[in-house]
Length: 129
Image 1 (tube, rainbow, N blue to C red):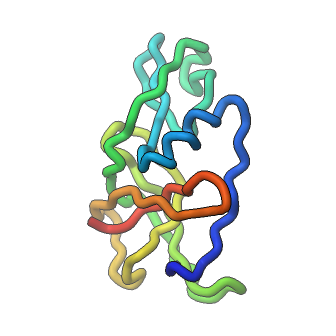
Image 2 (image 1 turned 60 degrees about the vertical axis):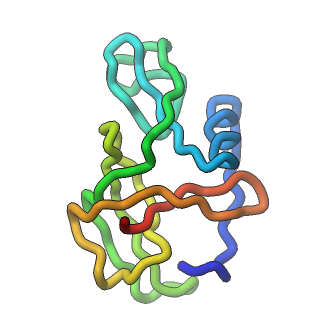
Image 3 (image 1 turned 90 degrees about the vertical axis):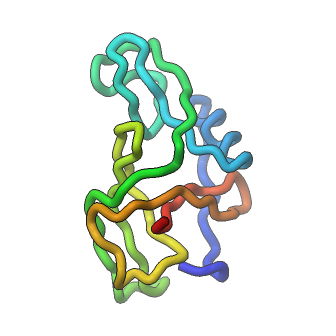
């Protein structure tokens, strides 16, 4: 993916508005449950582990490592890489890898969040460190 790519505008809802507002500041947010202590992504008000509604926003370091990935060499929009990143804080998330040589991606590789402009809030993606 390069700078010529037009990224889709994220669709906000009442649960995610704060998340998308913070991406404008270059911050990746996760949620943490106050009942069980587990962090989770994608941020939602109910903990997916214990179903408590006692969750709080927490800023992620934006650093992690590649857990798994797949290279899509042929697609209508051109080649891209997609995979799971495990954040330092614990949650894993599905993402695209950008601004990198896709042939050099590997499981366990350190990555960091980067934000790409849309017509709305910026979207978080990951790139090797």
